[in-house]
Image 1: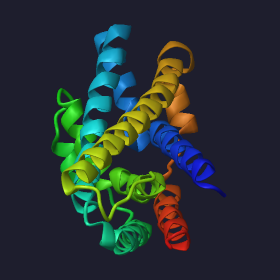
Image 2: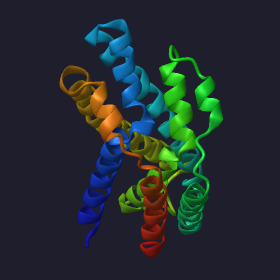
Image 3: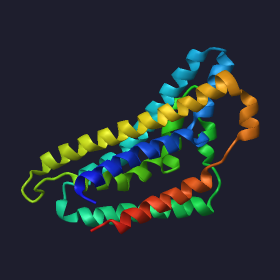
Length: 219
């Protein structure tokens, strides 16, 4: 697979992970439905989705930007990617054996959906899932790292981090909005009670899978 094909596949992985996060109830779309039902106003649905998207985007940025600062050390990029992949695998293994949801999320009032979304995405490792993908995209960018200034490297990596975070969050928001809109207008709360699905185990295993694939492609 050449560099262009690899980059395309990685960008599709960014979108796919966003859709995956969006359909997961743990990322908050049922809260948007709840807000609309309580207010009896469909506008509340979109306001809640916007708040959830804002929190999720900030959580992605909070994880990606520290790696942006590290990547100017071009000679250590391989080690950084290995360390990130191991970190993702470690979190996945932790979530496999620890099924309890973070209790502090229940203490966040419903009026602060952006804060709740930020904390939920951080606690579940949503941002960490993006790190190996982001690092892979950075490695596909053709540049003479040995001669490029550190500031130029950091600026370029920061732009990629912003693009990854925005693309992922947009995919997450659209997929979550489709489910929230369908439940609110057509399916109703009965759908949630009868068709509720839990992706916790799938989430944990997907973290391990992403980390393992990243290790396989480190060179």
